[in-house]
Image 1 (spheres, protein in one colour):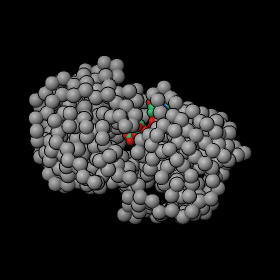
Image 2 (cartoon, rainbow, N blue to C red):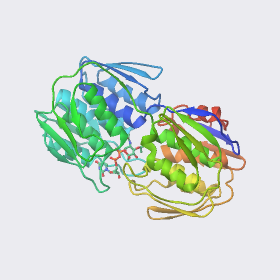
Image 3 (cartoon, rainbow, N blue to C red):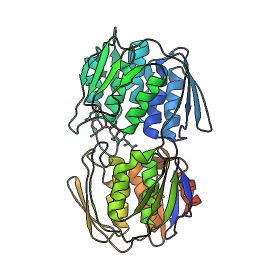
Image 4 (cartoon, rainbow, N blue to C red):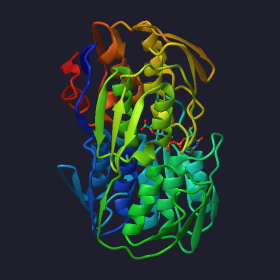
Length: 420
Ligand code: EPZ
């Protein structure tokens, strides 16, 4: 396994270029199975999760070429309808092929995705939505066995205990584009990645309206066309680098991003005291000013994203005063707190609320990554900690950040990858 070795205390400067959004690319690659037409995707991030999704669609029958962030997919025919356990266990988003296989082949056998470090991650809402559209689904021996005579449009309610579901909204949307009749998804998730998938499906020739609102309307259509589509920038990667500038008290420029997708993240940084300049597709972050404590309440979009909670916990751990973070989406998303405390952070966890008393400095330490965003938080803490920090099991990071250490090094950080 590999680790990052970070020497803390370096200032960052210059500019970083943001890659395409992981959480758009994964469902869009899966949705390409809907058609036997040619699909060309641009601005595809080169991530472990993307390569796992490519492995899965190739297993199902797709011909794929991936070169310099351009992904060419052609699936003349579906050869298999099963998503095997050894692929799904690596990446739970494999379940996105469910909707596409049901739409094209009327059947699918997908291994149940397990839970993960941040929570049980059920997919009952995906199943509820598909069943509403006339899909017979049985869970047998750890597999989702699904088949249908005909996907039929319907009013689909997929409200969960935490409100809307990004995954369930997208899976039902993909299944609905070729259903017989009209499907209405409510309450639909509004995340930019949901909009991106809907826009991709429309670029394929399908008919979706309402994306970005809590009510998405899909009129079933049989035909699709060749399509070329560019994935939106990754707002969480952009937010992570903005937080890196803040925690190291630096000023950097973040390029090829979409400031409109970061409203709550940038607003929170400004509340803490970070200067933020917004351009058309770039952000200038000035972390050199005095910062103060803040309270964060995680929420679905356009609220403060759960995927930025860990990174802000690292930042707030060295901001004078008492801050709080309330995590409302996932059950176990404070694992970075334990590792930050080993660096000297003063954090108390009370249920789904973390209380952070800012300390003057963190000390470098040997740390263990546990999940994708917690790992990013540990790297950010290492950038500012006194001395050396080693973050182990960085395979978690490689799932969702392209060339993370190379981008940080180009900004002036002292970070290198090595075998454990
Ligand atoms: C997507 O996960 C993202 N992953 C997550 O990003 C992100 O944190 C999450 O949306 C919330 O924004 C991808 O897009 C690949 P949900 P998803 O369905 O779709 C519960 C990252 O770091 N729920 O919106 O799984 C669920 O347990 C990852 O990039 C059900 O109860 O999230 C959670 O508590 C982490 N039943 C809440 O809803 C279901 O059937 C929101 O989950 C589905 C979800």
